Image (cartoon, rainbow, N blue to C red; front, side, top):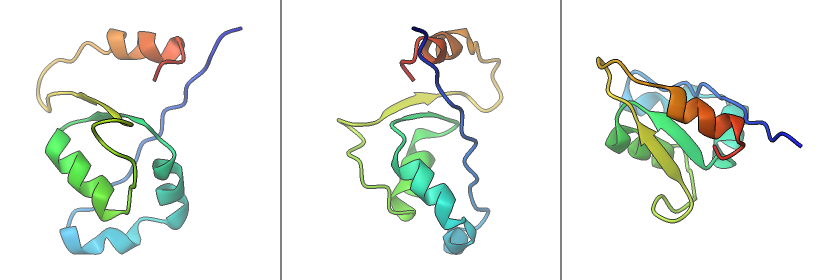
Length: 86
């Protein structure tokens, strides 16, 4: 049996004081995720905490950081997704 993964594009806010514009259903989906592909790890963790993400970042969550302006090889990420590991 082949495992499948889903990709969620999580919206973020342009100003730190406007997290209330993110719909509740998005926050509900995010609260169940444990793998994230992010541009900046520190910013991503801060944003997740701001929307009340409760999981332990060091034990329960996996982050893959990609450089903003670098050419990123997404093959390792897509391979993990196709194997249901992400």
